[in-house]
Length: 289
Image 1 (spheres, helix red, strand yellow):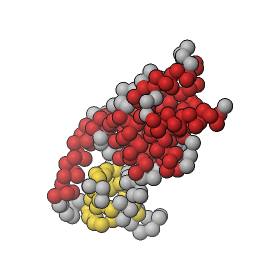
Image 2 (cartoon, rainbow, N blue to C red; image 1 turned 120 degrees about the horizontal axis):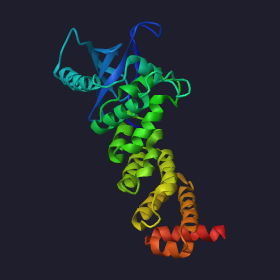
Image 3 (cartoon, rainbow, N blue to C red; image 1 turned 180 degrees about the horizontal axis):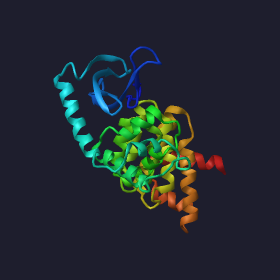
């Protein structure tokens, strides 16, 4: 199965060994899944255009001061539009350095830094822009709970879930996929889209966690969505010989007991129509008696 398509945002490229001058890849565009067009920066200025393959190997690169191509011009044009928009943000370079720290360690000189970071994440998600914040985190971040990453979680809660899904994939922050479970009732199509993507890449762990999270948020009155969720859990088990289906079912039945006056057997009878699901559920219930 194919590997997950990479993101190289934040990658440091050294000219002559690890201790020499380096450039940071802060802008990338996926080109049909095979190539990546990228801009490498010296501090805050783009200075190199590069073409990378999916392994991160450079197929071509040149200094923008020496050469221009159609592809480099397009990349620079799109980057400048984003940069112009970012110039209106109220996040300073000092704020960005502070954002690499957990909230308890941050200086927080800007009282509104959390709001500004969330707003920038939301804008990046809306427009599907390469995130300078995630590039900074990848390049220099040492804390997984930095302000950058904690505000990203909040932004994912607020943003359109379908756009967040694509944004997470493009930036290869796959561990944030389970956060999308909170949106499952408004966007039930996420179940099949996330499952199709990760199972096609033989990466069931992320989908399994999404399923478990979804059992907390899914409406127990929505039979169609529940069947969809359990069907994908069933697929995971058949490929990986796991027990995701059983665990998800148990979590749902516990909610039924707590949230309704309906016997679980009655709820199952009214909710599950799929014969394959029914058979597996009967087998599970027999073994748990």
